[in-house]
Amino acid sequence: MSRAEYGLTQARRLTRRGLATRDRIVRAAATLMHTRGVNATTLDDVRIASGTSKSQLYSHFVDKESLVQEVISLQAHEVLERQRQRLERLDSIRGLELWRDDVVRRNALRNGAYGCEIGSLASELADQDEAARISLNEHFNTWQGLLTAGLTRMIDDGVLRSDADPELLATGVMAALQGGYLLAQTARDVAPMQIALDMAVAHVKSFTTAPTT
Amino acid sequence: MSRAEYGLTQARRLTRRGLATRDRIVRAAATLMHTRGVNATTLDDVRIASGTSKSQLYSHFVDKESLVQEVISLQAHEVLERQRQRLERLDSIRGLELWRDDVVRRNALRNGAYGCEIGSLASELADQDEAARISLNEHFNTWQGLLTAGLTRMIDDGVLRSDADPELLATGVMAALQGGYLLAQTARDVAPMQIALDMAVAHVKSFTTAPTT
DNA sequence: CTACGATGGGACCAAACGGTCCAGAGTGGA
DNA sequence: TCCACTCTGGACCGTTTGGTCCCATCGTAG
Image (cartoon, rainbow over all chains, first blue to last red; front, side):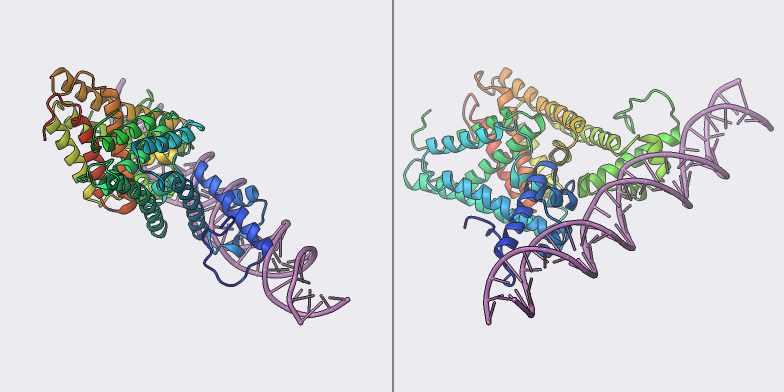
């Protein structure tokens, strides 16, 4: 699953070149929609950025909404794949801290601008496009599930107390992450995101069997 | 400061009727932009919702951007005024919990839809309108300042340990709040917001001088 | 080599958009 | 009462938008 295979539903029609074009369109749209917002991105912007033409846009996507759906699939795929690498091995507070450092460092590169690839789409689309809201919610849940699984491992390994609720902790971490993204985006400074995640990590730490640093 | 006085900068020209019209426009725009998003709200929408005409829009605001600025001022004024009531007396964990219950209950009324009046504007505008970003950031800081002041009182009163950093705690609470808003908005369920704020309150509690319930 | 579907370029369209303008109605101070 | 100025309604405008369509080109299976 290396290229352009994140959300193929249609059975008919496929050709190497066509797939490449489709891929270019979705990737260009994803970048534009992340940096400018969905509504502020026009199909002409996408057409120019992807070096394609109107007919190509409409031979691959029935309308703008369906292109947005593909963008959501792509962004979620990329974010979750990256997250999976760090989180599926998560089994210690140290691991959680490394995850936090990773995500903060990545956001620091652009001084918080643009926010979370999934979160900013969610904020803009949740009350405007029900299909988008539903899939974004699923992606949030998948993401949170990765955290929950890691925290559950930490309980099983005796790192966290057995009365810790991994679901609640994961929700808290996700909220701190998303809130951190938003505050950092607005302030153009990662600091609030760092602080928010520090809080979340501290909260998880408060459930360790033998409270340490 | 009861009506239409949240952001009057212009010195010249003012009449009772004109002010009322201006007020209607900003309020209609604020509601539409909060529920649909800024870019998804057209000036025609605003015109119809406020029962005015094009010339009135442009006699009060030079362009859409300046109308957006007024909407930001109005929303911030309303949110902060409401927050001030709860937060300027904040001096105990119980008070913090009451604040949390208030904000959660209010968001539960619409099942999380539309998100935070300030937060959703911030997410949409931060990377699109620099002036908007700056003022939204200031409003976030004001809001956070109310929390900081309350937490500082709690330190002074001996409720929280003196090594607690009220600024960091306030940032954490704000991030949990905004992240909670976003997750609730996407899930159309206040639960994640409740959980996020529970985490934030628990984190503050962890700094109490005599750890209690 | 040929035929046929996949691909591509871009002219074209109606509607919606932000914004301008002006003529007439309303209003308040002298 | 009158006058100057504000306020209002809405026709109008150029541009941008999402979307359609047609015809040329490509690529490959038979």
